[in-house]
Length: 129
Image (tube, rainbow, N blue to C red; front, side):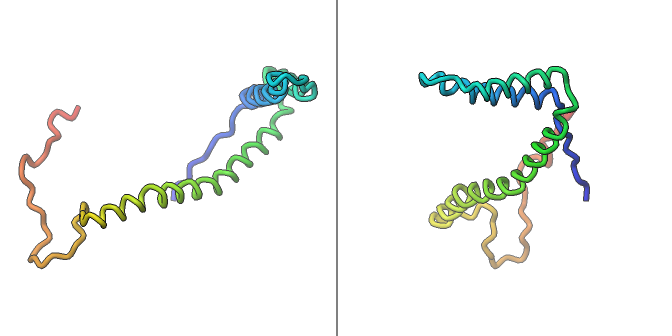
């Protein structure tokens, strides 16, 4: 089985993203009319400086954040796909059964062969390239 290797992002992009996150945290109360969060502004400036220098200090944090994302992906993806299945696919299937539709021709029929005769051209793939 082939496994896809996921590359970790650069320290520069990690630093800039966290600069923006902490800058938003520091400015959010200011927008509401409250005081600026100085601690968050300082942290955001530190992340900006380290990110622009592409510092190796950010490597452990970047790896930790990457592993956290992979862990979240293992839990959130099946939950999201479960919601899609049970909220979209299942109701459509029940409605199709209610109306008696058989789009996949799965109902058993008393015929000699289940071969479906095709009408029309054998292939519509002229001038592929």
